[in-house]
Image (cartoon, rainbow over all chains, first blue to last red; front, side, top):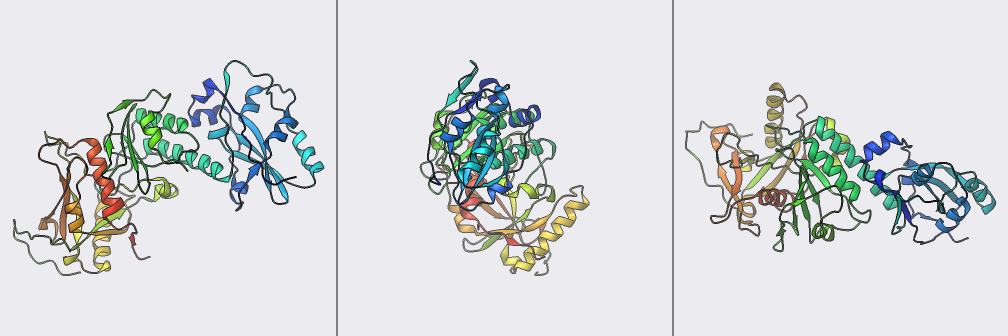
Length: 256
Length: 167
């Protein structure tokens, strides 16, 4: 069996739940927070997705829990790390443990999990283009969760770089920022953030040639592409509904 | 640190382009776990709420002509920490400073023509210099301009590495 697969896997989301903030999702559907074991792997990790889906393809009682715990067995030199990729793009991985090859053991572990109801999708579930879930993706998922924790902290603990003042983040700006991160495609880098004096949140994407600056002011986005360069473009403010991100901004954000 | 001579009101000097300026940095303990996620927006240029025109306030830096060694700057930073903590900012923690020459600060202009001024303001100490936003004469300075300018200061003009406070 090859140790690497590069397969497009359909990511399935429930549309209502997709619109929930990460913290709401976590409150409603608690998942494990242990990704340490995967994060410690220092080699590229890939997954054996096609076979995993086939092995899991039996009926289950709760489609959402399966959606949330979409399982990928991670391949790593001589062991398989069986991991739950909870909440898909925005959740966490729960390492179930390593199993040794040969494949018989591997299959025994896989078949002990609930199945993936690919054939029983309700109307509010849709498929997005697949991605390869590798170790960098998991790190990015983890980073975004930390950013959301920080956004919550900024609301309750004012922060400022000036010795004279600290600023709380407004609730509206915080909610808009969490929705923004939820909508940020996983192949895009996540930003650094800081609150500003008027309850807004500033987001910065460092890039050698084309940095991007975004200010989230309630549900209004103010942004500069190619910021600080002679090619800088100061865009007009855009209303953000929590749905699609502005194309000009999305196109300018650096990829991972 | 050089002993502060008595400064007569209104006495200020021109800061030469080649002179080094340092910015004191604080970072509260309670955000230590998030340090890598927080944008280093070290210059705020907060709006003066008492000013009907809402002009952004300048930021303070240390003129190294009057605080020539790193220890001199650390002494100023620690004194600021003591002052801030005594006035209600219990979590204020001086961690070090970043530096830049005055010339690159003065010469930068963003795409809309806005930049910075550098001005000696010795009434808070002979070492005390203000860096402020210098709007272009025929264009309004917007929120985006302000954000871009302060990002440029930290990302390109001042040193990237912090000269850390000794343990």
